[in-house]
Structures are given as C-alpha cells and as structure tokens.
Image 1 (cartoon, one colour):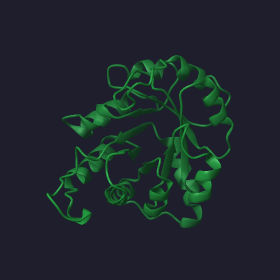
Image 2 (cartoon, helix red, strand yellow):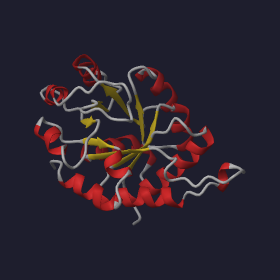
Image 3 (cartoon, helix red, strand yellow):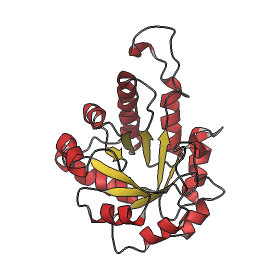
Length: 237
C-alpha cells in the first residue's frame, strides 16, 4: 500500500485530521521484536519482525503506533522510529514517539507523547514546532481539564483505567475519569488507556470513550492483524 507524500505546507493540518479520525492507538516496546547480535553496531540489529509487526497492526486497523521503550539505546530507538515512520507513511497511519523530543525531531515522526512529569507543552513545542501532534497522559480530572484547555495539546489520554504492568505501582482510575472526560464541552480528542483488551473495551466505550490505547492486547497477540481488527471493530465510529 502506498500513500502520497503530504504537502509539507499542510503537514500539521493533515496530521491533526488523521488524529481526529483515529480510534485505535497501539504502544509497543522494542525488545520483543528486535534480534540483537552478539556484538556490533545498531545497523546489524534484525528489524524484520518489527517491520512485520508495524505493518500487520496498521493493516488490522491501528491508526497510531507509538514506540515506548526506556530500556534500549538512543540509536536503537532512532532506528526503530525511522522504520515506524516509513511503514506508517506506507499505510496512511500516524507514527509516535514517547518522552524523547530530540528523537521525535530527528526521526520526523508525526506524534509526540509526554507524561505529567515530562516536558511542558511550551518546551515540547520549542523543540518540535507546530506541525507535530502532541499528546499528554492524564490520571486526574484536574489534569484532564488542564489538557483540554491547553491550546498546544492536541489530544490526551485518561488512565490507567485498569492496572497494567506497563505502569507498575500506578493505581487504576477506573472508567469514571473516562466518563468525566467525555462529559467535557471540548472537541479535543482523548483516548482511554490502561489494561484495555477485547473483553473490557466495551466498558470504556460505554463510559464515553471513542478512542483507546492498547499495548499487550496487540503486542502479545498470536495474530496481530486480527487482534487490531477486532479491537477496532469494538470502538465506535
């Protein structure tokens, strides 16, 4: 599948239009997909399994894929994000980096995501400019309201809805925060996140979420394309 290269003068607008149309957001680590050589430069890493994962997830219905792995080198993450951007462009999806604005800028990904204790919106914009989509994690209603009112934030996430090993020690907030976010008078999109899978995704949709972030439900699936497709079908259009 080949998608036309976007006009750079309208890149930010195109990315935000794709964000509004997005429903399924997949986060992945890297180590499960990368074949490490015994020794040698990052260029010798085996990325075929990672490329296949990206392609199958997008083909199944993922709109955004984010690389989030704090246990790899910067050079490995750069290589993985560069590959992600390439595959995302092939499928008309969005590519995302987490925490590292420098790596997001170097690789030219579409989306940059930060937590509450990471870069401020102004700091992220100073590094990335206006064309990159920026999202922020929220775990309280006060944080949700701040994100919704922040003109520099394009979307935010509410959670963790359920406890998840990707955020060890962080208490689950349940679906109440999802319901509070959906009740705001705001056109800004938000994603429910945290322990979401095919068995419980209807609960977050029922609480008002049109969008969801998943990790294990896709990254650990035996059939990545089928898992992404099933989750996408369970989210409202």
